[in-house]
Every structure is written in C-alpha cells, then in structure tokens.
Amino acid sequence: RAVLQALCGFDDARLDALEREGVLIRTEKKKG
Image 1 (cartoon, rainbow, N blue to C red):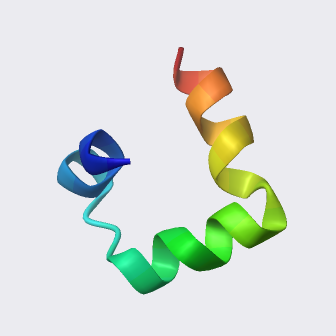
Image 2: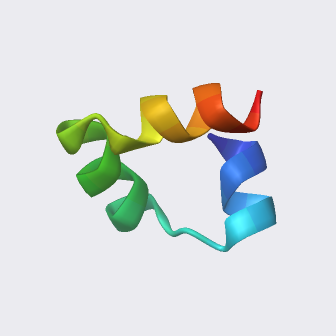
Image 3: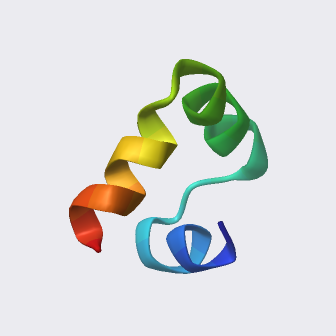
C-alpha cells in the first residue's frame, strides 16, 4: 500500500475506495 502511494500518488481515501471495490488487489497482481 505504501509502495502504491509512493509510485502512484494515491492518498489513503483513494486507496480505501479502491480496496472496497477490489481494484487495488487486481492492480497489485498486474504489477507483480
């Protein structure tokens, strides 16, 4: 999560929204 914040500039609220939708999990798998 901290890595994505650094790389993508996502804030906590944005990451929370993504996690609720399951998008963050898919993104992490895609980026390996």
